[in-house]
Length: 381
Image (cartoon, rainbow, N blue to C red; front, side, top):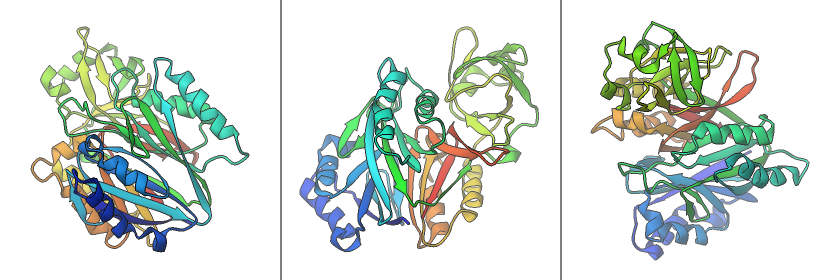
């Protein structure tokens, strides 16, 4: 069984004050069980000022996580904040590792992760996953490489690092106070852990009824829809190139395997009219055009959470930055909705550059997926 407690600090400059605030809130001598793991979400400047490293150095357990542009734990929500969620247990154990994302990223992931998995006879029950936001290697590519190494039988849940800058240039993953621009950070959970997953994506009413078939694609590059180029297909809806790439146009993918549909962002268009998307675009899958707005964000989060909240648990959640942007000036609204529904249950909410969460297929099997325009949830107990 896993228990949880949290701490926050807004002190971004003074290491001693920040450490004192975190330790006073945690009371580790009183609250820690035999094994513990910290999950950090923070504004990127906490790393730049050294406060992040000072906090991690003062804690008697490993910490993992990522930068973000907004974070919330238990009614404390802000942009410039560091939140720490501690998982602690007598019958679960925790381990962390860093997977460098090199040019030969598949081999790099395998050579680092495989010895860790083979070291003992017990496989991790769950991998908490923090991906870097990179142009050269997509989140789907990293997820696939990890799945290939594990054999695909271990659920992955987590987020892609993001930040408050226009080009996300300070977004980093975190392990024990060290921050990485090009590395996956994993938290391996072993033992008696109970978990469940769910996602809040697009309301069905915000998805166009016209369905198409992906006829040609290369990984995350959508080249053909119904035998036309991606741009030609999308222009049939009266969309301009600017409409397509502004981040408010989700493409909704049905994999036809019984899992929930997965939303994809369009990041750019090539001169040939191909769409560079935020995840794999599988040939033969059904495609539809969606829309996201504030009402949709809050409605889907509320409906999903109502079915997930349970006493004696902790809920980890990561929400796509597109949903955050759709909230406009009410950018704390989704976090406040979580606080309202979770009431006294421990929760973590943070903004994401891409979401990692398994879905259940028609046979009841968990399949790891990479998401956009989605809030993903993991309930642990």
